Image (cartoon, rainbow over all chains, first blue to last red; front, side, top):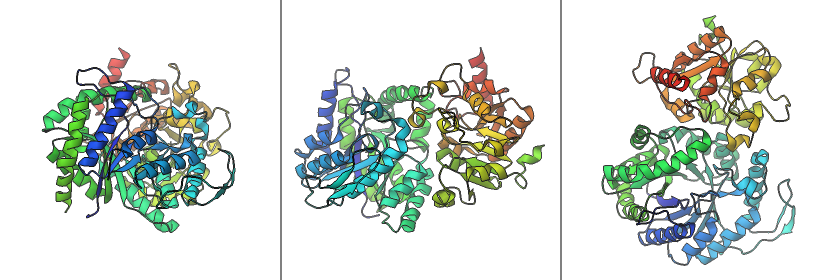
Length: 342
Length: 225
Protein backbone atom coordinates (compact mmCIF):
# COMPACT_ATOMS: atom_id res chain seq x y z
CA UNK A 1 0.00 0.00 0.00
CA UNK A 2 3.00 2.28 -0.40
CA UNK A 3 2.04 4.35 -3.40
CA UNK A 4 -1.44 5.60 -2.68
CA UNK A 5 -2.17 9.03 -4.10
CA UNK A 6 -4.60 11.51 -2.63
CA UNK A 7 -6.57 14.09 -4.52
CA UNK A 8 -9.26 16.70 -4.14
CA UNK A 9 -12.11 17.09 -6.56
CA UNK A 10 -14.64 19.86 -7.12
CA UNK A 11 -17.30 20.83 -9.63
CA UNK A 12 -17.00 24.50 -8.71
CA UNK A 13 -20.17 24.47 -6.59
CA UNK A 14 -21.41 27.98 -5.83
CA UNK A 15 -20.45 28.56 -2.17
CA UNK A 16 -21.72 31.07 0.32
CA UNK A 17 -19.40 33.99 0.90
CA UNK A 18 -18.43 34.82 4.45
CA UNK A 19 -21.31 37.27 4.63
CA UNK A 20 -23.75 34.47 3.83
CA UNK A 21 -24.61 35.41 0.25
CA UNK A 22 -24.17 33.10 -2.68
CA UNK A 23 -20.97 33.73 -4.59
CA UNK A 24 -21.04 34.64 -8.27
CA UNK A 25 -19.82 32.08 -10.80
CA UNK A 26 -16.67 34.14 -11.23
CA UNK A 27 -16.01 34.27 -7.47
CA UNK A 28 -16.62 30.53 -7.24
CA UNK A 29 -14.03 29.87 -9.93
CA UNK A 30 -11.44 32.12 -8.29
CA UNK A 31 -12.10 30.39 -4.99
CA UNK A 32 -11.39 27.00 -6.57
CA UNK A 33 -8.07 28.34 -7.85
CA UNK A 34 -7.21 29.53 -4.32
CA UNK A 35 -8.11 26.10 -2.90
CA UNK A 36 -5.93 24.42 -5.51
CA UNK A 37 -2.99 26.67 -4.62
CA UNK A 38 -3.37 25.71 -0.96
CA UNK A 39 -3.66 22.03 -1.89
CA UNK A 40 -0.41 22.33 -3.84
CA UNK A 41 1.36 23.94 -0.89
CA UNK A 42 0.13 21.12 1.37
CA UNK A 43 1.54 18.44 -0.91
CA UNK A 44 -1.78 16.94 -2.02
CA UNK A 45 -1.05 14.99 -5.19
CA UNK A 46 -3.99 15.72 -7.47
CA UNK A 47 -6.54 18.50 -7.95
CA UNK A 48 -9.47 17.60 -10.18
CA UNK A 49 -12.27 19.78 -11.53
CA UNK A 50 -15.38 18.36 -13.15
CA UNK A 51 -17.41 19.64 -16.09
CA UNK A 52 -21.06 20.57 -15.60
CA UNK A 53 -23.48 22.83 -17.37
CA UNK A 54 -25.84 23.76 -14.55
CA UNK A 55 -26.41 26.95 -12.55
CA UNK A 56 -25.18 25.56 -9.21
CA UNK A 57 -21.77 24.60 -10.63
CA UNK A 58 -19.36 27.23 -11.97
CA UNK A 59 -17.03 24.94 -13.88
CA UNK A 60 -18.08 24.09 -17.42
CA UNK A 61 -14.60 24.32 -18.90
CA UNK A 62 -12.27 22.36 -16.60
CA UNK A 63 -9.08 22.84 -18.58
CA UNK A 64 -9.44 26.63 -18.54
CA UNK A 65 -9.61 26.54 -14.75
CA UNK A 66 -6.69 24.10 -14.70
CA UNK A 67 -4.67 26.46 -16.89
CA UNK A 68 -5.20 29.18 -14.31
CA UNK A 69 -4.15 26.84 -11.52
CA UNK A 70 -1.17 25.57 -13.53
CA UNK A 71 0.70 28.86 -13.52
CA UNK A 72 0.27 29.31 -9.75
CA UNK A 73 1.28 25.84 -8.58
CA UNK A 74 4.43 23.71 -8.59
CA UNK A 75 3.79 20.06 -7.93
CA UNK A 76 0.12 19.14 -7.87
CA UNK A 77 -1.26 17.18 -10.83
CA UNK A 78 -4.13 18.89 -12.60
CA UNK A 79 -7.02 16.76 -13.66
CA UNK A 80 -10.55 16.94 -14.99
CA UNK A 81 -13.12 14.92 -13.13
CA UNK A 82 -14.71 14.34 -15.53
CA UNK A 83 -14.47 15.67 -19.06
CA UNK A 84 -17.74 14.78 -20.79
CA UNK A 85 -16.17 13.28 -23.88
CA UNK A 86 -19.49 12.25 -25.44
CA UNK A 87 -20.44 15.87 -26.13
CA UNK A 88 -16.96 17.17 -26.87
CA UNK A 89 -14.52 16.83 -29.73
CA UNK A 90 -11.72 14.38 -28.91
CA UNK A 91 -9.25 16.41 -31.00
CA UNK A 92 -10.00 19.59 -29.04
CA UNK A 93 -9.94 17.73 -25.72
CA UNK A 94 -6.49 16.45 -26.52
CA UNK A 95 -5.27 19.89 -27.64
CA UNK A 96 -6.60 21.67 -24.58
CA UNK A 97 -5.13 19.19 -22.13
CA UNK A 98 -1.83 19.05 -23.99
CA UNK A 99 -1.80 22.85 -23.57
CA UNK A 100 -2.42 22.53 -19.81
CA UNK A 101 0.35 19.95 -19.79
CA UNK A 102 2.70 22.55 -21.30
CA UNK A 103 1.66 25.28 -18.87
CA UNK A 104 2.08 22.96 -15.89
CA UNK A 105 5.34 21.29 -16.92
CA UNK A 106 3.74 17.92 -17.51
CA UNK A 107 1.16 17.83 -14.72
CA UNK A 108 -2.03 17.59 -16.82
CA UNK A 109 -4.38 14.65 -16.66
CA UNK A 110 -7.77 13.99 -18.16
CA UNK A 111 -10.51 11.79 -16.76
CA UNK A 112 -12.91 10.92 -19.54
CA UNK A 113 -16.50 10.12 -18.77
CA UNK A 114 -20.03 10.05 -20.03
CA UNK A 115 -21.12 12.40 -17.28
CA UNK A 116 -24.04 11.88 -14.96
CA UNK A 117 -25.93 14.86 -16.38
CA UNK A 118 -27.17 15.44 -19.88
CA UNK A 119 -27.32 19.23 -20.27
CA UNK A 120 -24.25 19.16 -22.51
CA UNK A 121 -26.07 17.15 -25.19
CA UNK A 122 -28.61 19.76 -26.33
CA UNK A 123 -26.13 22.55 -25.56
CA UNK A 124 -23.61 21.24 -28.07
CA UNK A 125 -26.09 19.77 -30.52
CA UNK A 126 -25.89 16.08 -29.67
CA UNK A 127 -28.75 13.62 -29.47
CA UNK A 128 -29.23 11.58 -26.29
CA UNK A 129 -30.27 8.68 -28.50
CA UNK A 130 -26.63 8.47 -29.63
CA UNK A 131 -25.42 8.30 -26.00
CA UNK A 132 -23.60 4.97 -26.37
CA UNK A 133 -22.28 5.51 -29.89
CA UNK A 134 -20.92 8.95 -29.04
CA UNK A 135 -18.81 7.65 -26.19
CA UNK A 136 -17.74 4.45 -27.95
CA UNK A 137 -16.50 6.29 -31.04
CA UNK A 138 -14.92 9.19 -29.21
CA UNK A 139 -12.98 7.12 -26.70
CA UNK A 140 -11.65 5.08 -29.60
CA UNK A 141 -10.51 8.21 -31.43
CA UNK A 142 -9.06 9.69 -28.24
CA UNK A 143 -7.03 6.56 -27.58
CA UNK A 144 -5.48 6.94 -31.04
CA UNK A 145 -4.75 10.64 -30.55
CA UNK A 146 -2.84 9.71 -27.39
CA UNK A 147 -0.19 8.07 -29.57
CA UNK A 148 0.66 11.65 -30.66
CA UNK A 149 1.19 10.42 -34.20
CA UNK A 150 -0.90 11.31 -37.29
CA UNK A 151 -4.34 9.72 -37.06
CA UNK A 152 -6.70 8.48 -39.73
CA UNK A 153 -10.18 7.80 -38.45
CA UNK A 154 -13.76 7.75 -39.61
CA UNK A 155 -17.03 7.33 -37.76
CA UNK A 156 -20.53 8.69 -37.48
CA UNK A 157 -20.09 11.29 -34.74
CA UNK A 158 -17.57 13.72 -36.25
CA UNK A 159 -15.78 14.46 -39.52
CA UNK A 160 -13.26 11.87 -40.65
CA UNK A 161 -9.54 12.47 -40.13
CA UNK A 162 -6.98 11.68 -42.81
CA UNK A 163 -3.45 11.46 -41.53
CA UNK A 164 -4.23 14.34 -39.19
CA UNK A 165 -1.44 15.51 -36.93
CA UNK A 166 -2.60 17.23 -33.77
CA UNK A 167 -0.71 19.88 -31.79
CA UNK A 168 0.74 20.71 -29.33
CA UNK A 169 2.62 17.51 -28.57
CA UNK A 170 3.33 16.82 -24.91
CA UNK A 171 6.93 16.81 -23.74
CA UNK A 172 6.60 13.37 -22.24
CA UNK A 173 4.75 11.96 -25.24
CA UNK A 174 2.10 10.72 -22.85
CA UNK A 175 -0.97 12.58 -21.66
CA UNK A 176 -2.18 10.87 -18.50
CA UNK A 177 -5.73 9.62 -19.20
CA UNK A 178 -8.24 7.89 -16.95
CA UNK A 179 -11.85 6.86 -17.45
CA UNK A 180 -14.43 7.74 -14.82
CA UNK A 181 -17.18 5.16 -14.31
CA UNK A 182 -20.28 5.38 -12.16
CA UNK A 183 -21.13 1.71 -11.93
CA UNK A 184 -22.02 0.51 -15.39
CA UNK A 185 -20.35 -2.89 -15.81
CA UNK A 186 -19.99 -2.32 -19.54
CA UNK A 187 -18.06 0.90 -18.91
CA UNK A 188 -15.69 -0.96 -16.60
CA UNK A 189 -15.00 -3.55 -19.28
CA UNK A 190 -14.52 -0.88 -21.94
CA UNK A 191 -11.98 0.95 -19.75
CA UNK A 192 -9.98 -2.24 -19.40
CA UNK A 193 -10.23 -2.89 -23.13
CA UNK A 194 -8.40 0.38 -23.83
CA UNK A 195 -5.95 -0.15 -20.98
CA UNK A 196 -6.93 3.10 -19.26
CA UNK A 197 -6.84 3.46 -15.48
CA UNK A 198 -10.28 3.25 -13.89
CA UNK A 199 -11.72 5.95 -11.60
CA UNK A 200 -14.80 4.70 -9.80
CA UNK A 201 -17.32 7.34 -8.78
CA UNK A 202 -18.64 5.94 -5.52
CA UNK A 203 -21.30 8.33 -4.36
CA UNK A 204 -23.78 6.12 -2.54
CA UNK A 205 -23.92 2.91 -0.57
CA UNK A 206 -21.04 1.04 1.00
CA UNK A 207 -17.72 1.19 -0.86
CA UNK A 208 -17.35 -2.56 -0.35
CA UNK A 209 -20.08 -2.99 -2.91
CA UNK A 210 -17.66 -1.80 -5.59
CA UNK A 211 -15.03 -4.45 -4.91
CA UNK A 212 -16.51 -6.70 -7.63
CA UNK A 213 -16.10 -3.83 -10.12
CA UNK A 214 -12.41 -3.61 -9.26
CA UNK A 215 -12.23 -7.34 -9.80
CA UNK A 216 -14.10 -7.05 -13.11
CA UNK A 217 -11.63 -4.39 -14.29
CA UNK A 218 -8.63 -6.57 -13.44
CA UNK A 219 -10.06 -9.68 -15.04
CA UNK A 220 -11.16 -7.82 -18.15
CA UNK A 221 -7.67 -6.34 -18.55
CA UNK A 222 -6.26 -9.83 -18.28
CA UNK A 223 -8.66 -11.08 -20.94
CA UNK A 224 -7.86 -8.19 -23.31
CA UNK A 225 -4.14 -8.42 -22.63
CA UNK A 226 -4.01 -4.81 -21.45
CA UNK A 227 -2.54 -3.35 -18.27
CA UNK A 228 -4.69 -3.25 -15.14
CA UNK A 229 -3.63 -0.04 -13.42
CA UNK A 230 -4.27 0.72 -9.75
CA UNK A 231 -7.90 1.71 -9.35
CA UNK A 232 -8.95 5.17 -8.25
CA UNK A 233 -12.08 6.07 -6.32
CA UNK A 234 -13.77 9.38 -5.82
CA UNK A 235 -16.37 10.10 -3.18
CA UNK A 236 -17.88 13.13 -1.46
CA UNK A 237 -17.03 14.35 2.01
CA UNK A 238 -16.24 17.21 4.32
CA UNK A 239 -13.84 17.72 7.21
CA UNK A 240 -14.03 19.95 10.28
CA UNK A 241 -12.51 19.81 13.79
CA UNK A 242 -15.07 17.37 15.19
CA UNK A 243 -17.61 14.93 13.77
CA UNK A 244 -20.52 17.04 15.03
CA UNK A 245 -19.12 20.26 13.65
CA UNK A 246 -18.51 18.68 10.25
CA UNK A 247 -22.03 17.29 10.04
CA UNK A 248 -23.68 20.47 11.30
CA UNK A 249 -21.85 22.65 8.79
CA UNK A 250 -22.14 20.27 5.87
CA UNK A 251 -25.66 18.85 6.04
CA UNK A 252 -27.77 21.94 5.22
CA UNK A 253 -25.51 22.91 2.31
CA UNK A 254 -25.37 19.35 1.01
CA UNK A 255 -29.15 19.10 1.31
CA UNK A 256 -29.67 22.13 -0.91
CA UNK A 257 -27.68 20.48 -3.69
CA UNK A 258 -28.95 16.94 -3.13
CA UNK A 259 -32.62 17.97 -3.10
CA UNK A 260 -32.27 20.09 -6.22
CA UNK A 261 -30.58 17.26 -8.13
CA UNK A 262 -32.91 14.73 -6.52
CA UNK A 263 -36.01 16.57 -7.70
CA UNK A 264 -34.80 16.18 -11.27
CA UNK A 265 -34.49 12.44 -10.75
CA UNK A 266 -37.75 12.02 -8.90
CA UNK A 267 -36.27 11.42 -5.45
CA UNK A 268 -37.94 12.77 -2.35
CA UNK A 269 -35.88 15.26 -0.26
CA UNK A 270 -33.01 13.72 1.71
CA UNK A 271 -33.61 13.29 5.43
CA UNK A 272 -31.12 13.81 8.23
CA UNK A 273 -31.45 10.10 9.08
CA UNK A 274 -30.48 9.08 5.53
CA UNK A 275 -27.54 11.46 5.69
CA UNK A 276 -26.40 10.06 9.05
CA UNK A 277 -26.66 6.53 7.68
CA UNK A 278 -24.62 7.41 4.60
CA UNK A 279 -21.96 9.08 6.78
CA UNK A 280 -21.83 6.09 9.13
CA UNK A 281 -21.94 3.25 6.58
CA UNK A 282 -21.98 4.64 3.08
CA UNK A 283 -19.79 6.67 0.78
CA UNK A 284 -19.82 10.04 2.46
CA UNK A 285 -16.61 10.91 4.30
CA UNK A 286 -17.82 13.55 6.74
CA UNK A 287 -16.31 14.15 10.16
CA UNK A 288 -13.17 14.96 12.10
CA UNK A 289 -9.82 14.22 10.46
CA UNK A 290 -9.58 10.99 12.48
CA UNK A 291 -13.04 9.76 11.47
CA UNK A 292 -12.58 10.61 7.81
CA UNK A 293 -9.11 9.06 7.73
CA UNK A 294 -10.33 5.84 9.33
CA UNK A 295 -13.18 5.47 6.87
CA UNK A 296 -11.02 6.35 3.88
CA UNK A 297 -8.37 3.84 4.90
CA UNK A 298 -10.98 1.14 5.22
CA UNK A 299 -12.45 1.86 1.77
CA UNK A 300 -9.01 2.07 0.13
CA UNK A 301 -7.98 -1.25 1.64
CA UNK A 302 -11.24 -2.95 0.66
CA UNK A 303 -10.95 -1.92 -2.97
CA UNK A 304 -7.19 -2.17 -3.20
CA UNK A 305 -7.35 1.39 -4.53
CA UNK A 306 -4.24 3.30 -5.56
CA UNK A 307 -5.87 6.70 -5.45
CA UNK A 308 -8.57 8.46 -3.49
CA UNK A 309 -10.08 11.78 -4.60
CA UNK A 310 -12.34 13.55 -2.11
CA UNK A 311 -15.13 15.71 -3.55
CA UNK A 312 -14.95 18.37 -0.85
CA UNK A 313 -17.25 21.15 -2.02
CA UNK A 314 -20.83 19.84 -2.19
CA UNK A 315 -23.56 22.43 -2.31
CA UNK A 316 -23.39 25.90 -0.85
CA UNK A 317 -20.79 25.11 1.84
CA UNK A 318 -19.22 28.47 2.77
CA UNK A 319 -15.87 29.43 1.30
CA UNK A 320 -13.96 29.58 4.58
CA UNK A 321 -15.29 26.19 5.72
CA UNK A 322 -14.27 24.66 2.40
CA UNK A 323 -10.81 26.16 2.63
CA UNK A 324 -10.39 24.75 6.13
CA UNK A 325 -11.54 21.31 4.88
CA UNK A 326 -8.82 21.46 2.22
CA UNK A 327 -6.28 22.35 4.88
CA UNK A 328 -7.37 19.57 7.25
CA UNK A 329 -7.33 17.06 4.39
CA UNK A 330 -3.74 17.93 3.50
CA UNK A 331 -2.31 18.42 6.99
CA UNK A 332 -4.14 15.72 8.93
CA UNK A 333 -6.32 13.33 6.96
CA UNK A 334 -3.82 12.25 4.31
CA UNK A 335 -0.94 11.63 6.77
CA UNK A 336 -3.33 9.69 9.04
CA UNK A 337 -4.56 7.48 6.19
CA UNK A 338 -0.97 6.79 5.20
CA UNK A 339 -0.18 5.81 8.80
CA UNK A 340 -3.17 3.51 9.06
CA UNK A 341 -2.34 1.76 5.79
CA UNK A 342 1.43 1.59 6.38
CA UNK B 1 -49.16 -22.14 -8.00
CA UNK B 2 -46.49 -21.09 -5.52
CA UNK B 3 -44.12 -23.70 -6.85
CA UNK B 4 -43.01 -20.95 -9.23
CA UNK B 5 -41.07 -19.41 -6.38
CA UNK B 6 -39.54 -22.69 -5.30
CA UNK B 7 -35.83 -22.30 -6.02
CA UNK B 8 -35.64 -25.93 -7.07
CA UNK B 9 -38.17 -25.38 -9.82
CA UNK B 10 -38.42 -21.80 -11.02
CA UNK B 11 -35.85 -20.27 -13.33
CA UNK B 12 -35.47 -16.49 -13.20
CA UNK B 13 -34.72 -14.69 -16.45
CA UNK B 14 -33.33 -11.15 -16.32
CA UNK B 15 -33.31 -8.88 -19.35
CA UNK B 16 -30.67 -6.23 -18.72
CA UNK B 17 -27.14 -6.78 -17.42
CA UNK B 18 -26.50 -3.31 -15.99
CA UNK B 19 -26.55 -2.04 -12.43
CA UNK B 20 -30.02 -3.30 -11.52
CA UNK B 21 -29.95 -6.52 -13.55
CA UNK B 22 -26.70 -7.73 -12.02
CA UNK B 23 -27.85 -6.91 -8.47
CA UNK B 24 -31.11 -8.83 -8.94
CA UNK B 25 -29.18 -11.72 -10.47
CA UNK B 26 -26.93 -11.83 -7.40
CA UNK B 27 -29.92 -11.82 -5.04
CA UNK B 28 -31.68 -14.58 -6.98
CA UNK B 29 -28.57 -16.75 -7.10
CA UNK B 30 -28.03 -16.24 -3.37
CA UNK B 31 -31.61 -17.44 -2.84
CA UNK B 32 -30.92 -20.59 -4.84
CA UNK B 33 -32.67 -19.85 -8.12
CA UNK B 34 -31.24 -20.77 -11.49
CA UNK B 35 -30.72 -17.44 -13.30
CA UNK B 36 -30.44 -16.58 -16.99
CA UNK B 37 -29.39 -13.05 -17.91
CA UNK B 38 -29.28 -11.21 -21.22
CA UNK B 39 -28.41 -7.76 -22.52
CA UNK B 40 -28.75 -6.08 -25.89
CA UNK B 41 -25.27 -7.34 -26.74
CA UNK B 42 -24.27 -10.89 -27.68
CA UNK B 43 -23.93 -13.28 -24.71
CA UNK B 44 -20.16 -13.55 -25.19
CA UNK B 45 -19.86 -9.79 -24.63
CA UNK B 46 -21.33 -10.03 -21.12
CA UNK B 47 -19.94 -13.40 -20.05
CA UNK B 48 -17.03 -11.97 -18.05
CA UNK B 49 -19.23 -9.32 -16.42
CA UNK B 50 -21.73 -11.96 -15.37
CA UNK B 51 -19.03 -14.33 -14.17
CA UNK B 52 -17.63 -11.61 -11.88
CA UNK B 53 -20.74 -9.71 -10.82
CA UNK B 54 -23.35 -12.49 -10.83
CA UNK B 55 -21.34 -15.68 -10.61
CA UNK B 56 -23.48 -18.69 -11.45
CA UNK B 57 -25.93 -16.91 -13.73
CA UNK B 58 -26.02 -17.99 -17.36
CA UNK B 59 -25.37 -15.33 -20.00
CA UNK B 60 -27.63 -15.82 -22.98
CA UNK B 61 -29.85 -13.99 -25.48
CA UNK B 62 -33.02 -12.18 -24.47
CA UNK B 63 -35.27 -14.54 -26.36
CA UNK B 64 -33.56 -17.61 -24.86
CA UNK B 65 -33.79 -16.19 -21.33
CA UNK B 66 -37.43 -15.26 -21.86
CA UNK B 67 -38.24 -18.64 -23.39
CA UNK B 68 -36.57 -20.79 -20.71
CA UNK B 69 -37.36 -18.78 -17.60
CA UNK B 70 -40.51 -19.12 -15.51
CA UNK B 71 -40.40 -15.56 -14.23
CA UNK B 72 -38.76 -12.80 -16.27
CA UNK B 73 -37.51 -9.51 -14.82
CA UNK B 74 -37.21 -6.47 -17.09
CA UNK B 75 -34.16 -4.46 -15.99
CA UNK B 76 -33.29 -2.70 -19.22
CA UNK B 77 -33.71 1.02 -19.96
CA UNK B 78 -37.43 1.80 -20.08
CA UNK B 79 -36.92 3.79 -23.27
CA UNK B 80 -35.62 0.66 -24.97
CA UNK B 81 -38.49 -1.51 -23.74
CA UNK B 82 -41.04 1.06 -24.90
CA UNK B 83 -39.28 2.70 -27.85
CA UNK B 84 -40.59 5.85 -29.46
CA UNK B 85 -40.74 4.27 -32.90
CA UNK B 86 -42.84 1.40 -31.56
CA UNK B 87 -40.49 -1.20 -33.02
CA UNK B 88 -40.67 -4.35 -30.95
CA UNK B 89 -37.51 -4.84 -28.83
CA UNK B 90 -38.74 -7.32 -26.23
CA UNK B 91 -39.19 -11.03 -26.99
CA UNK B 92 -42.96 -10.64 -26.90
CA UNK B 93 -43.84 -14.16 -28.05
CA UNK B 94 -41.56 -15.86 -25.54
CA UNK B 95 -43.00 -13.72 -22.75
CA UNK B 96 -46.62 -14.53 -23.56
CA UNK B 97 -48.37 -16.23 -20.64
CA UNK B 98 -45.41 -15.64 -18.32
CA UNK B 99 -45.08 -13.61 -15.19
CA UNK B 100 -43.02 -10.57 -16.14
CA UNK B 101 -41.67 -8.20 -13.49
CA UNK B 102 -41.20 -4.59 -14.55
CA UNK B 103 -38.30 -3.16 -12.52
CA UNK B 104 -37.82 -0.21 -14.86
CA UNK B 105 -38.19 3.53 -14.40
CA UNK B 106 -38.08 6.52 -16.65
CA UNK B 107 -34.56 7.88 -16.25
CA UNK B 108 -33.80 10.93 -18.32
CA UNK B 109 -30.05 10.36 -18.24
CA UNK B 110 -30.58 7.21 -20.23
CA UNK B 111 -33.92 7.59 -21.91
CA UNK B 112 -33.65 11.22 -23.01
CA UNK B 113 -36.64 13.53 -23.08
CA UNK B 114 -39.74 11.35 -23.36
CA UNK B 115 -42.99 13.22 -22.57
CA UNK B 116 -44.86 10.00 -23.36
CA UNK B 117 -43.19 8.37 -20.33
CA UNK B 118 -43.44 11.26 -17.89
CA UNK B 119 -46.92 12.74 -17.81
CA UNK B 120 -48.71 12.91 -14.46
CA UNK B 121 -51.34 10.50 -15.75
CA UNK B 122 -48.83 7.96 -17.05
CA UNK B 123 -48.12 4.74 -15.20
CA UNK B 124 -45.18 3.40 -17.16
CA UNK B 125 -45.92 -0.20 -16.23
CA UNK B 126 -49.24 0.09 -18.03
CA UNK B 127 -47.34 1.08 -21.18
CA UNK B 128 -45.05 -1.91 -20.68
CA UNK B 129 -48.06 -4.18 -20.16
CA UNK B 130 -49.57 -2.86 -23.40
CA UNK B 131 -46.33 -3.73 -25.21
CA UNK B 132 -46.50 -7.30 -23.86
CA UNK B 133 -49.92 -8.70 -24.76
CA UNK B 134 -50.63 -11.92 -22.91
CA UNK B 135 -47.90 -11.44 -20.28
CA UNK B 136 -48.81 -11.30 -16.60
CA UNK B 137 -47.11 -8.04 -15.73
CA UNK B 138 -46.20 -7.10 -12.17
CA UNK B 139 -44.39 -3.89 -11.20
CA UNK B 140 -41.75 -4.54 -8.53
CA UNK B 141 -38.15 -3.75 -7.55
CA UNK B 142 -38.33 -0.32 -9.20
CA UNK B 143 -38.58 1.95 -6.15
CA UNK B 144 -35.51 0.87 -4.22
CA UNK B 145 -32.08 2.16 -5.28
CA UNK B 146 -29.86 -0.59 -6.58
CA UNK B 147 -27.28 -0.18 -3.85
CA UNK B 148 -29.95 -0.43 -1.15
CA UNK B 149 -31.25 -3.51 -2.96
CA UNK B 150 -27.74 -4.92 -3.04
CA UNK B 151 -27.16 -4.44 0.67
CA UNK B 152 -30.69 -4.92 1.94
CA UNK B 153 -31.52 -8.63 1.85
CA UNK B 154 -32.44 -9.98 5.32
CA UNK B 155 -34.04 -13.20 6.55
CA UNK B 156 -37.79 -13.33 7.16
CA UNK B 157 -38.69 -11.81 10.51
CA UNK B 158 -35.52 -9.69 10.83
CA UNK B 159 -36.60 -6.41 12.48
CA UNK B 160 -34.47 -4.42 10.00
CA UNK B 161 -35.96 -6.13 6.99
CA UNK B 162 -36.89 -3.72 4.18
CA UNK B 163 -39.87 -4.07 1.87
CA UNK B 164 -40.47 -4.07 -1.86
CA UNK B 165 -43.84 -2.79 -3.04
CA UNK B 166 -45.51 -4.43 -6.01
CA UNK B 167 -48.59 -3.89 -8.14
CA UNK B 168 -50.30 -5.82 -10.90
CA UNK B 169 -53.66 -6.68 -12.37
CA UNK B 170 -53.27 -10.48 -12.07
CA UNK B 171 -53.80 -11.36 -8.42
CA UNK B 172 -52.24 -14.81 -8.73
CA UNK B 173 -49.17 -13.34 -10.43
CA UNK B 174 -48.87 -10.73 -7.67
CA UNK B 175 -48.85 -13.56 -5.11
CA UNK B 176 -46.08 -15.38 -6.92
CA UNK B 177 -43.99 -12.22 -7.13
CA UNK B 178 -44.65 -11.50 -3.44
CA UNK B 179 -43.24 -14.95 -2.61
CA UNK B 180 -40.24 -14.29 -4.83
CA UNK B 181 -39.58 -10.96 -3.10
CA UNK B 182 -39.74 -12.74 0.25
CA UNK B 183 -37.31 -15.43 -0.80
CA UNK B 184 -34.90 -12.77 -2.13
CA UNK B 185 -34.79 -11.20 1.34
CA UNK B 186 -37.47 -8.51 1.46
CA UNK B 187 -41.03 -8.16 2.75
CA UNK B 188 -43.56 -7.74 -0.03
CA UNK B 189 -46.27 -5.06 0.04
CA UNK B 190 -48.97 -5.62 -2.57
CA UNK B 191 -50.50 -2.29 -3.58
CA UNK B 192 -53.13 -3.86 -5.81
CA UNK B 193 -53.75 -2.98 -9.45
CA UNK B 194 -50.96 -1.91 -11.78
CA UNK B 195 -52.26 1.65 -11.83
CA UNK B 196 -51.68 1.85 -8.07
CA UNK B 197 -47.98 1.45 -8.80
CA UNK B 198 -47.88 5.09 -9.94
CA UNK B 199 -46.87 5.95 -6.37
CA UNK B 200 -43.62 3.98 -6.92
CA UNK B 201 -42.48 6.06 -9.89
CA UNK B 202 -39.88 8.86 -10.04
CA UNK B 203 -41.32 12.03 -8.54
CA UNK B 204 -43.82 10.13 -6.39
CA UNK B 205 -43.91 9.36 -2.69
CA UNK B 206 -42.27 5.93 -2.70
CA UNK B 207 -39.58 6.43 -5.31
CA UNK B 208 -36.23 5.71 -3.70
CA UNK B 209 -37.91 4.24 -0.62
CA UNK B 210 -35.71 1.95 1.46
CA UNK B 211 -38.29 1.30 4.17
CA UNK B 212 -39.92 -1.49 6.12
CA UNK B 213 -43.34 -2.85 5.18
CA UNK B 214 -45.26 -0.86 7.82
CA UNK B 215 -43.58 2.39 6.78
CA UNK B 216 -44.38 1.73 3.14
CA UNK B 217 -48.05 1.18 4.00
CA UNK B 218 -48.03 4.45 5.97
CA UNK B 219 -46.62 6.39 3.04
CA UNK B 220 -49.18 4.88 0.67
CA UNK B 221 -51.98 5.77 3.05
CA UNK B 222 -50.77 9.36 3.37
CA UNK B 223 -50.37 9.64 -0.40
CA UNK B 224 -53.97 8.52 -0.90
CA UNK B 225 -55.34 10.85 1.80
